[in-house]
Image 1 (cartoon, rainbow, N blue to C red):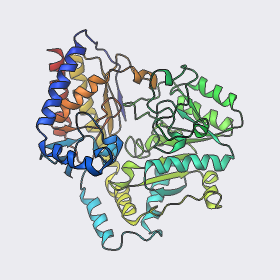
Image 2 (cartoon, one colour):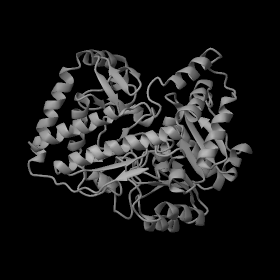
Image 3 (cartoon, rainbow, N blue to C red):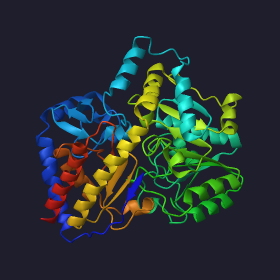
Image 4 (cartoon, rainbow, N blue to C red):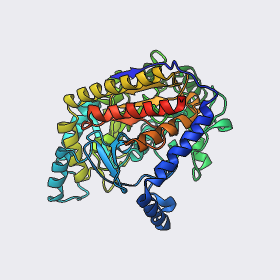
Length: 464
């Protein structure tokens, strides 16, 4: 399921200047080879705020404009064919235009696309998720942000308490309660054992920020202290069982997830696993099944919808009874949309089958093996962390165990590699230091080999 290795390599005094030179050279190649994208960008900036449709799409040297996708590939507006290991920030586990998804959506389109009423496909999806995650009751939404927002509301409604806990540096969407301590640096972090509750962006009221307490990942002692300091006030904790917005960070403290489960329960608080990124990608039942720790609430999105906007929350009968009794209205005009439910049903029952996860395992092992060979050969200050369909090359001399380790990483390594990959025909998320690769069921051995070849090209240039 997972592949991890400690770093052995080293930084050299020449790395910094070489990285600056390589980044400048590769950015020049990137821009020069994309004249139509530059033209489109100029047009976009007249009526799209910032020239893009989401702030996460703003990246150096320029946003990437995609025209179409098929299988494991995408083509940009300048006609470049790219192996897609970005996969929509982890959405496209099924790959692009998968025949089963295409068939399901095309059939549904001819039968009506929206009623604001449930359709039978939603029952099949809920039954499948209940079996995979071990939680009996489900509701649907339209994004990961909606899922985590509902989870926070549910924790508060079920306990009658207002405060929540989140892990330092993690991203759980852009609603107020979780826009706290996301990508802070420097003095905004606070002491190691007393992280600050700092707003992640403008527009978040101070009163709401104060309701969110922050703890480090892999740290049960601080978690115990926060509960003791706010006894009887904390509704619950929301966390990723694997941190997925700092590359990939696994729990290294023995019994960490079990400890979180125990502590929250002892204090009458609820536990939510944000599985927007890990759900269905690292294991058929996400981190919940992979690590054998069952939370009170699971949040899903991304890979669930097979490429359509989606979100879902699953919970215990006790928690979800707050919805059943009408004490909390989990609502949304597009919740359970027929197109999304048709795509999700096909994704779960016809595409992400046991054979798909066997394929992920084989591709991941091939990919990580190729990367390790390059890292060892060129003595790079890096290691590979991979689990399920996801992985990353993390440029750190030691294994990253929490957000503060991540902050110390020199982002120039990741950005330079992103440029070498993109100019070499592999599309990755533009926030290289923070993000990871994502495999799909339609990727080939040749696709993952190209990633390792581009890593070798970068390493050769860096060490020459």
